[in-house]
Image: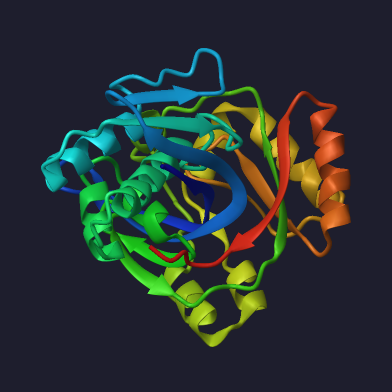
Amino acid sequence: MKLVETGYAKINLGLDVLGLRPDKYHEVAMVMQTVSLADTVTITDAPELQVTTDLPGLEGGPSNLAYKAAVLMGEYARRTPRVHIHIEKKVFLAAGLAGGSTDAAAVLRGLNRYWELGLPAEKLERLGAKLGSDVPFCVAGGTALAEGRGEILTALPDLPPLYLVLAKPGLEISTPWAYREFDKQKNVVHPDIEGMVKAVRAGDIEGVLRRCGNVLEPVTAGAHPEIREIKQRMLQNGAKPVLMSGSGPTVFGFVKEKKAGEEIAALLQSMQMETAVAELVGRQKV
């Protein structure tokens, strides 16, 4: 038997940090969104659990979130995960796009179908929360308000398939570092998450785009001027709004047409950036 799942990347249309929790995680409020840049996760029978990838050097063993997801599902279903999971990577690595989390979510969905468990999305999301804060959102994706440490989700109406261009410079940003540096910031400008949620529900796309913001962007861009340079190039070439995703370093900008995104992507690729043109993707069936 062979089963194929798609692991869509995520962006943060809005990301606010509300403070430090007693458990040392940060309280967040985010509007998260899946985009069509995606990994392909293939599950087949095997004598024992094996996770492989098409990227040399990308570890597929027990430290990989997809491997952990398979072990977790096996424990929940009380069966040994005798499967081979192969991941074809398209989502940029260490990029603020939830590449590892979306693969783990694809494994949760995939094994749910592969073993005919019939678990609803809500149960898979709760299992995913044991693996990482972004995994629950990646289970069904679409557009959602994420609160708590990111695992408390409120599904929102799908946005239309707007085009965007994504670019990642040759940087790796530590998420814990970004949050530690954020804690030192003063005069933080907080995005209007509540207003964005209302705009999504009202189908007010201009209102959504007008409220895009990420409180971690000044932290990462302050330490890495490449972020500001990418933003400037995108804005100069007609993308709007332009924003960093998560703790970075990937920057995305909305464009009116796919061709405009391809032209910007080509320009940034010539500057040694990883680039992609994608569109917004609605909530997935589980």
